[in-house]
Length: 277
Image (cartoon, rainbow, N blue to C red):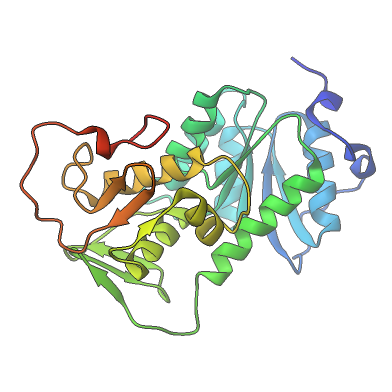
């Protein structure tokens, strides 16, 4: 296992030694930090507290689930590699029906650089990920970005958004398909609402990252994975999507009338430039 000081870049030393208290409500919100390395946990918590967050900490999966139920954080910073129950399983359980936290934003930490590990985190519902080594200041910016999108997604008022059997209530943050409520993560909900506001338009992945994620740069595969997850929840046949279409070389288009004849195979036009559908 790498030493704790190898998990950080740049300014990590500035946060070391900061006392951490989870009992005071922070003006910026409440964050649960889950990491089994006490030094990593302390430094991350220190930076978050100095940014105005109230921080609770947990060092394994079961205590993380308990803390999420007890303290009701606004966001979880979750390490992928945890003893006993890894971060993927913790995220799955937070997202599970009946867990009481299906919309809780999650920023996942991973010491692995493999693309597949990042995809797995996004597939189980993480809203963002940061790969170690990382700058604690960058992590704070990512946390703020995710929370800003969460708060900005709740307008003072507005009409329901409806198309293709789907209905989204932006105020109640409730989405249904043919009258049945959908279990969507924060980012999936935002992505669906954006598509419903831009029916028939081609939305490039760069545009979606900028408008839905609020990022001017980043890994575009994040968009690809979230589109795939959203398709799995709204399409009758996710392998042959009729609602969220891939426009080859351009991006995605939400079709309000999806009742096209079923195709026998997924054509090349249904694949993104990086080979994923």
